[in-house]
Structure formats: C-alpha cells, structure tokens
Image (cartoon, helix red, strand yellow):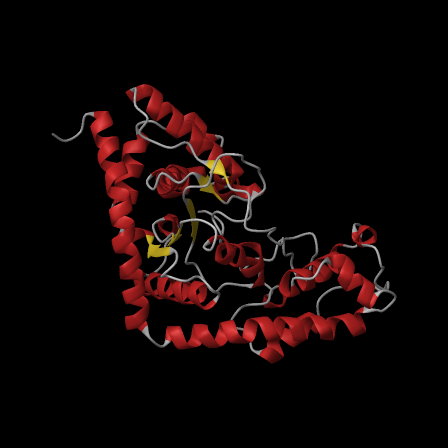
Length: 349
C-alpha cells in the first residue's frame, strides 16, 4: 500500500512546461501535521499555479482489509480534511478514485505492458510484504501499475513526488514509453517529477527526530493531528523531545541536533519565516522559551482548519455533492485517454 501521501513533496527538477498536475492521498485516517506541511499546503499553492487533480486513493486502500463502513467514512473524512486545509473544489478537481471506473480499467490494460521483474524490484513491495510475500495481496504487488494508470489516465505532465515514491514515477515512465513503443502510438504523455509551488517541509516525529511523523507510530505523542484540541497540541509540543543546549543563531549548527532542527523547521513552515530569522529571535534561549511560541503558532494555524473540518464532517450531503462534482469532471477528462489506449491495443470497434 502506498504511504499516507502517495505523491508528496517534489525533489526532482524539470524544465518541461506544466500543463496538468495530479496527486493522490490514501483515505486511511486523520491527517497530521506532517501531511499538512509536507504536501497539503503545497497542493493549496499548486492549485493557484496550474490545473490540478487531487484524488482520494480508495482503490489503493484495497491492498489491506478495511471494513466497508470504515472505508466510506475515511473517504468523506479525508475529503473534509483536504477542503478544510484549503483545497478548493471549484479550483481543483477533487474526487474519489473509485468513482472513476477508468482507473481500474486502465490499470488492467497496463498490466499487459508492465513486467513482473519491474514490480519485484519495487522497494515498497519488498518492505511492506517482508518475509510473507506469499501471504501478501495481489493488490499490494500490483498497486504501482494502478498508480501508473492514475497518472497516465489524465495525461498529467507533472507529478509531485517524494523520495519514497520516485521509483514509482520512474516505473510509470517506463510503462508509458513501452506502451507507446509497442503500439507505435503516442497514447500517453510521459510525466515528469514536479518542481514548483514552494518548498515542502519534511516533518519528523516529536519523539524521534530521525523518523518521519507518521500516523502508524504507536505513540500519539509523536505527531500533531489536525483534530487535536488546542490543549493537546500545546501538551505535545511541551513534551516533544529536545536536547539541553540553547538554540544557536546559525541554522548550520542544528545539523547534528535532529530534534531541535525539527522543531525549528516546523516553526518556519507554519509561520512562513526563514529558519535564520527564527533563530535570530531565539538565539541563546532554551526550549522553555521556544516551545510555547511554537505551540501558539501551531494552534493559530490548526484551530481554524479543525473548525472547518468539524463543520464539513457534519454535512455528508455537501461532501458527497462536492465529490460527485469532482468525479463527473474526472470522468470527462479520463474518457479520451482510456478510449485511445483501447484503440491502440485493438480493443473495441
């Protein structure tokens, strides 16, 4: 299964013009600060810069067993969280993956192009299947092909991608190139990694500065959830792991201090200030002074998101209307590519 943000912060440059951007996120639980600063705020900026499609990857979630009612609730919950965080369904196309049948259909067509060896080499398959490859679902093995279909279906020129997903974009490019070559067509745009929309923050655990903030961490104190109360946010920052040294004036001096670097980075990302400016203000002071300021900044940013999220969660009809609106647009955009792929393969009449 892909990570929480299956396509997140960009790391590779491209000189090709941006004509359409696509990104997806699994609806597998509440968003946390890492998602917000690492991807969602970046999506919010991107929707002002280029045509964007953002989808809830509920088909990808089938690689694990989730009760049906839970999956439906998670799709609505993630939609509410994205809209509350600033995704505007009137600017970007926001939809649930399963509401556009072309995703699954194109995945099957691309299974004829993808190669077993390519999928066996995927790092996430090796990591997530572990020693129980025989007991892993076929969906877990094949989801990179579905991810390729997600991207190629909309002729996306650019895909925001983080280090953990770069290999999957390379696979998508391989599939697109081989399909075009095998069929003697130019059916698919070969996508590029996206660079733009500002720099995304890499947010680490509040308990371990060497590990990414993640909802899978057993300790809830390791992350700030977007549904946490003001008091919970303040308590988590107050108890966040740090070191006994005062803050320096130079960001370079934080390189060997992962917990300190993480908290300063969070402050910079949430306020829009540079790390240098923050350190200039707190130079020589300890975390007893810094942590309350960080907690206040986080509360100021998250409280309105939480309020909007709670309001949206109480209006399922409006959430469904917005998702239906996005799905209708996505179906229109996907249809020509699916038809072209079928014709290239000699399917249909």
